[in-house]
Image 1 (cartoon, rainbow, N blue to C red):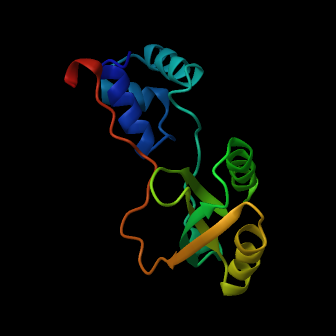
Image 2 (image 1 turned 45 degrees about the vertical axis):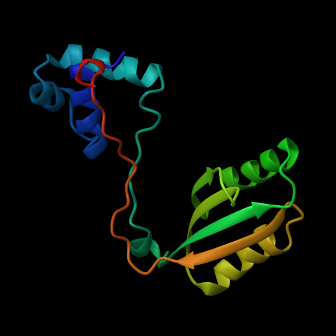
Length: 157
């Protein structure tokens, strides 16, 4: 169960996970040791799945962001899992969603240039026996990008 203090901690560390437990504790009204215990539990319970740095793709040479809708040839578990595994392990795929509706997957990919995209498209969309259709949209402007989720405590719902 997420209480108000856990919710405060989670909302703060999603914005800045470099705070010390002293700083974080001061913000939420806990001692550093109590704050550390809560953080440890949130990590152990896999509520905090990772502590990561968010890198600006354009600043590291990945100027093209694309959204690719993918429809599989067959909707069976083997083909779905095959495509999932390929996307999980591909370094150019930033996000991959298995979805309901007309399409089966939505990919968010980051590319250096159109040549890199063409290679990806050929290997994972055109030449793939599991993919029947795909469509690509090029991102013109990133209005908002993030991974944070609003956290509210059980009693605030």
